[in-house]
Length: 349
Ligand code: ADP
Image (tube, rainbow, N blue to C red; front, side):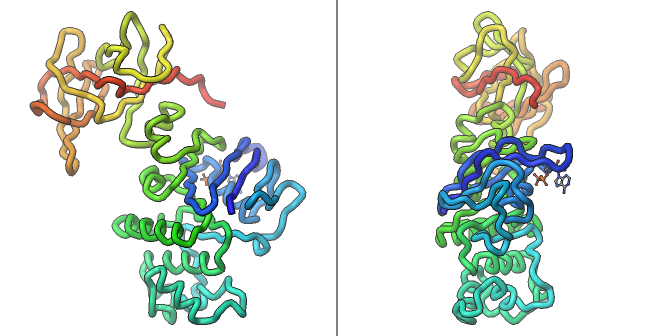
């Protein structure tokens, strides 16, 4: 069942937490809500689960009204499962009892529970109490508890945040495989772009209560709707520029128009999205000399940190050719169509 939001708005007193949110989380897919703290992610989950009333707009599951201003079924009447950041298992119940909690009494008994424990990698641990499991295991148990009643929609609020970083990657891969295999419609809240790219089929980028962009990870990377959305993914930097004569004047040199894609109208202030892998290092010329300030090896890549004479830094990835040395004066040349240009945004709101 798809989960659809139509024109949702929500305020806490004078704080407008959500402003006209509309999107559909498709059936059987994972949709990530990505945004910094306070942008309204939890508010959207809570009003879907029935922990908050819908003030404006409506929520639909499989085309049927779930909740609006005048229709507000209680949480337990909604076909929606919830997983919180810390798992929130009942501490006085065993893992098996926790998983059994949401199941109907006639719901298949202990073999169903054992099946779920096996699916999340906790086979044989049903008799333990939550404090006898590691953080990662507790989070798996919470996942099993939320999924066992087979809700049509699963809402997960920062579900991997309390799991240590080494385990987090493998847990979210397993979790993605499991969710996809069960065909669940899932919304996962995260503030971590890498996590959203890793686990989401779609990403909803939220910014101060609004949707900045909705799309697949590839769409967000290739065609971001603004320099800011682009900067969230793929190690990009945003600088300002201005079109003058036949080129774009920036703090790091004047670049040909052929380097730029997007909206670059004449003599308008621009925001330029630079990808670290979009440059070549060339010899310094009179117009634009940059100093190599640092060279960092990060796994397979080498990053070169350059600074202009005002001290402003640009980090690029070394691709081919001779490696410059720290202190050397160089220039950079963007590759064709590697810089995305946007008309500088008026201040939001
Ligand atoms: P996120 O989950 O993205 O961090 P929230 O949905 O928790 O964002 O919050 C959105 C905005 O609403 C924030 O400005 C937050 O301070 C405010 N807010 C959230 N809950 C309450 C509340 N119970 N009372 C007042 N303001 C709240």
